[in-house]
Amino acid sequence: MKSFRFCSHMVAVLFLVGAILAFAAPADALWYRVHGTAAQMQAATSPHWYMGWGLDINLNSSSSDWIHFPVPTVGSPMGARNISIYFYTGSVDVWVAQVDVWDGNTKIKSFTGTWTQANAYRSLPLDLGAWHVFTQGLGISVLVKAGVEMMSHRIIFVRASANFTSS
Image (cartoon, rainbow, N blue to C red; front, side, top):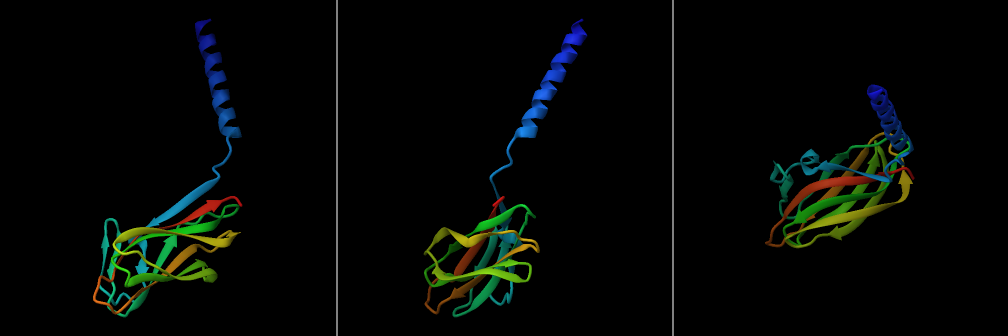
């Protein structure tokens, strides 16, 4: 009799756990991030180092380079509308000038600006303007530029990310 009661209790517990899992709603959003060590420099003519915390670049005076991030991608029915990059600039004479968002070899959106902040880390959230399912893989390309002033041209990339949702 005791074992029958134990078995019936176990069946009830397993049924409840199964019901909870079956009716649990999926997560509303998934931030997929790639670490700065995954970034690739296009020209790589300036001194740069891959450190445990990201990509550290000391741009040559009056130079520029593209930094490319391969962000992990979730397939349909998930898509993204918001992306973000997190970086450090050593002075106001080095900045992020452009951010391009790619689905494989198709450019989805391009942002231009002068994003900098002296001796500080900065999060740069960007809205793609519409929700997009990335079928070929998400790439975030960042154009960095350095001025000619006698000040730091150091820029560090810590991460790039995208917020995947189900629309």
